[in-house]
Amino acid sequence: MNRDATGLAGVRHKIYETLGSTNAEALALARAGECGPLWISARSQTAGRGRRASTWVSPPGNLYATLLLVEPSSVDTAPQLSFVVALAVHDAVAQCAPALGPALKVKWPNDLLIGEAKVAGILIESENEPRFMVAIGIGINCISHPPDTPYPATDLAAVGAAVAPGALLDALMAATNQRLAQWRRGENFAGIRTDWLKRAAGIGREIRVRLPEREIAGRFQGLDAAGRLLVQQAGKPLEAVTAGEVFGFGSGA
Image (cartoon, rainbow, N blue to C red):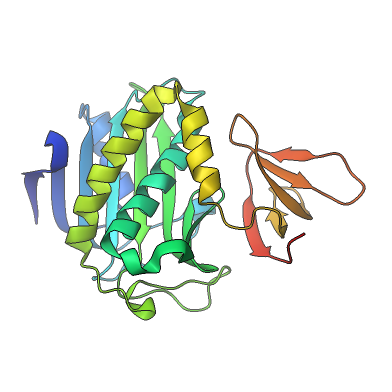
């Protein structure tokens, strides 16, 4: 079962009871000629997924949504959407649960933390044919979270914030529109980078970064102009990491 609606600022919204994956549905629609922008949400997913092909457990009660964008920017600039949307997720949760305040932090490249536990994740997938299309999948734990995850997880209810998925999605739609306008198809990544760093978890602290072929440990020194993670390992030159997963934060300076 699905129904169509119009979201905030006139962006269309397809609402499903159950989907395998909102990202997979978005890309299938784009291949069939959908031009976006289009939001797709589902009450639950049967094949939700996270980064590196991990499973995203998707029971009812949490938020599962994807924004489909067609040709949102150049292919080279599109990875910046991780930071744009991470800020939008931060904005939306902060609006709906203001008491959380400074406990909300973004973790490179695109997770939202409460303290040091993950409450939301973003998965961006793209295809180049027949056009450049991007599916931005967002999962936010409203009332439940999976146990025994590689990185600690939590949900909004567990920290005392009662937020309905529908209200959160409304806030997310509005916040995403605002952050995309700020970004200007990559012309103002400097502004996005500045705002992201203000909300970043672990600046100046020791971190571990799992790369495809190795793991490094060092001090998190911020982002370069392209959004790469800057890590200072003891006795080594500053390293810029393009893709990886941050695990754990140690002591600060």
